[in-house]
Image (tube, rainbow over all chains, first blue to last red; front, side):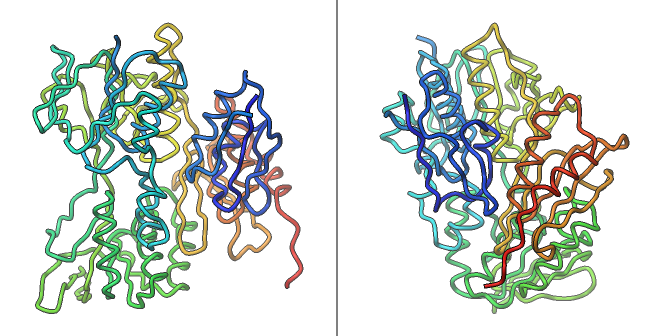
Length: 65
Length: 413
């Protein structure tokens, strides 16, 4: 298992993460990321890391649980 | 051991290296950058880095430690000058030869040079050194003249105003800003934005010359006006850095010509990512070259997959996405937009600053959108375009979805 962390102050609402993994990320009315889940099964990790790397302001990290 | 050489250490190159490791690439990876600084991200150069609210550290893409941990060899400070396909090697300016099994070209683009010369005080914005030089010049005060009302020009003007300059002029020969990506009726909104914020806009007027005078610079316009300037920024587009491939036999045509897999049409061991790549977009049925951050990142993932999975090649068929931050406005473009398409405007909660413009083709199918200060509308449009890439949705249906994405009005506080 891995955990997703979001830096809400850094988030600028570019929404690349939502396009990359919409089961994990959403955007609220103010354009700030919402984590739909915080723990990620190992099978999904590569895909969610790819979505995190698509963040233009590096607001997302995936860490070992 | 297999070895992949990536030429270009901006976002396309760095993300390709990282994606290769994520895809389980077992070989060596060398990442070549012509600048003598660790890889950094470019969008902040015309915004936060210019404003002084970001530093080189905060815009870094890959530290030496992270590169070492990922098994990525950083080769910095010397540009690639030649590709020798016979010997399977890239030659660098300092005489080094970098052998490869797979080569990824990610050399990006450079600013279209000023046709009016570059006397002292004339700047472009593409590299960290450019941004630092311009930041220092802006701190010495105005007047500032920005030539070109595209994204870079508009962002520089907005940032300069934020730094306290009170004499900022944007000049563009087109009658509206952002004319390459928006129809005039919509683009004029951004001309008004500049004017409202205090930037003097001279649209529909061309520059004839830039002269050095004892007090600084003078910018001559084709209506006879002469604008005094301490600093001039020229932001009139970019050209791909593909000239170093001239004698390599790799086909180029305003970018490295690639197939749908982002593989050179001339050599199956050579790939191209980012601003320098002109690849066949299977969804659009034509070659394209995009100068968008998100495209470089998505293309890097595709190329890394294709290098590591030669028997399961993936096409690159992205939905275009680009943003520009000007003043306190977030301007985002997704899919296809512009003059030849029908468009309909949908107002957000505060129509003066939040709205979406939906673009549709001759069959009323939704193909793209401009979204301003309205995050939920942006994500709605991106979702629809991503899911309907092969079978576009009727624009009326998307109109309803966007209407439903409007947040409730808030009580004034």
